[in-house]
Image 1: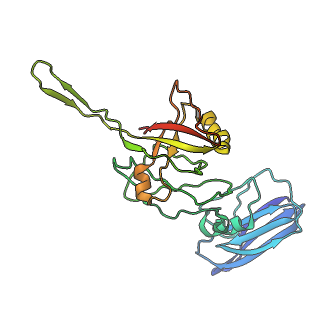
Image 2 (image 1 turned 90 degrees about the vertical axis):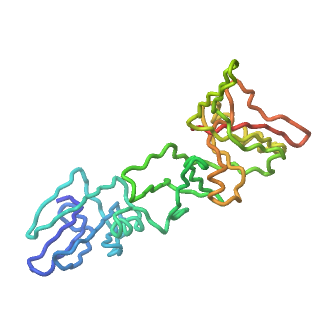
Image 3 (image 1 turned 120 degrees about the vertical axis):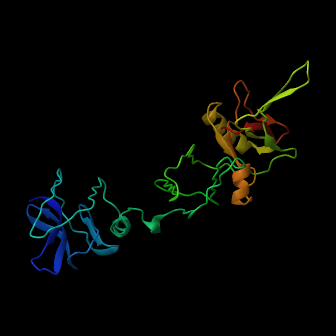
Length: 291
């Protein structure tokens, strides 16, 4: 018999034996067994590859082996022995999980290994209302190398949560700041039509007056102009958006209020950096919030 097994056996009315093992040609290559009282819920995981196997249960590594001959695996069998067993969930992974993931999976039901987390923001309160347009902006102090990004959104008081845009990307942190004369405000889309005969006004409020920012980067180094800025123009064009963060030292609430998601290049614009003097270049931007 060739298989990877999770077996529940035992004739006792008070305890059972849990056995997780790898069989090749009916010969046991690796096995870990533990006794548990009847009527208890348990979570067990087994990860196996050639000469690399591990078993964990309820957050504890029961054992591992560096001498395993793997059988061919092409089916999943669920069988019943002499005990009545209820399975809440069965998960099969195509890749061999790390031992840390095996332990985490048996503890919480998630394969996230907390020891391998590159960055954890913890619980973050969402910023709602027109002032921040629902922004939740998070910054890291440095680069992080990770396999994937996980975002959990939860609010037990709400039946549903609507997320307009979820974006993650590299941060271009300027070597020198913006020039004086930065303008931050709103583009007024409200209308006030005046009757030329009577002078009466007819006010039509817009659904939203989007935020905008106008600023100049007066001192781009040649490296910034030919690397980060050139890449920004090439990748975004006028059809894609970026997040403008005016001050990374702001509080999170103020960052949420000031940061703007919108286009940094406009249709028909000659999106280019200008050489203002010998060592430095400059570029002016006007970003209107995308609603």
